[in-house]
Image (cartoon, rainbow, N blue to C red; front, side, top):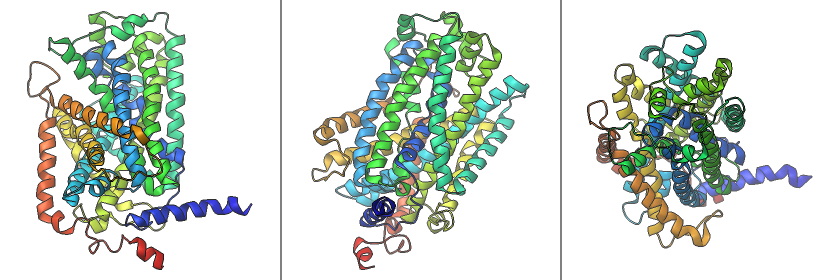
Length: 513
């Protein structure tokens, strides 16, 4: 009996000791289970959010083949990235995650590597938070229009976005225990929600498309004539959805048994998303009633603004059920936004702890009552709102800003993986890939290089101000910002223990205490 009562305390002590060896005090409340850690990443990937809101990308660029071949194809390579990241996470389970890993793994100019990765990660997560909650507001406005006839305008969509992100800020402020509970609810909401939608789409429609068409049907609404290029552009739907699983690393300092639970959270969130997302996407595509180019064109120009929502309406012959399925999607997107604020705030807290963000001492404070980085939470909320303001007047400008989300995150994802491959003296943590580490790591590096190229290519033709891909400009802006800030303050203050004495501790000092 004594063993069962003392085990949790012992586990927490071990986690705190391991964290101290990495140079940090245990300040955040360590109240997350391994399942909750997984749930945060799984909620941010959110197959019910990403697959639904991004479905039009693949439908327009490749059609069924880009959706149902593209999803598992991209998923396998993303799993390689997740596995490679997880191995490094096991060695360095800190809230800083990617930038801290880069700093430890780089041979030369360690602080500069950490600084650059940190800024891509930080701004990428701010952009992802903005994109998720604005996407949730867009879906909820479509739902409100369908159910209550509410007029959808850029201004009231932005107003709903503000309400959502403030609620997410408040939920995170109340404490990690509440976040853990809601993350667990979110995971089950996604799993049960997918099952409900899939069941409805197979039971209620009187007609389904053939397996051959659902896997190989092709549609091209891009304006480009080269079919392989069109298909590759369609892969961006899956790649956009498979983001955010670094969240398991960012909440590592709040997770019990983090050296094994956090890497498992990274990997399992991607693996379950591959399986669940594929079942969901196949079921939605098979339920399309008109498989002609004209029929798909109508889905892409649907008044709902969401082709899957129109598929629900067309195939179920039951408007009430279609609205209920859309409600499930709205709930998933709400949970997705909440989890994104969690991950974003923990990363910015850690980055501030190392004196990276202007005003770091303020953003690195932890609320002693809740054990959460309250100031950092509201910093992320505020920056996400600022990034989304252009959406009220120019949606293309908003997309230009948020395009940094995926590219910025994947640059941050792959850099420590590459550095780990170049570090021959790396000693793995308790969770590792063994002899598969090399092949998995290099596949991950090559894949990310490939998809970064895809993300900067023009997705449609002719190229106009509205169709131009602004992603390269966004990446250059972030790189320039990171460079300027490095010489302005980072070179002197970043990761200098004297400047962050109130938040850091050496292992020797811990042993003395």
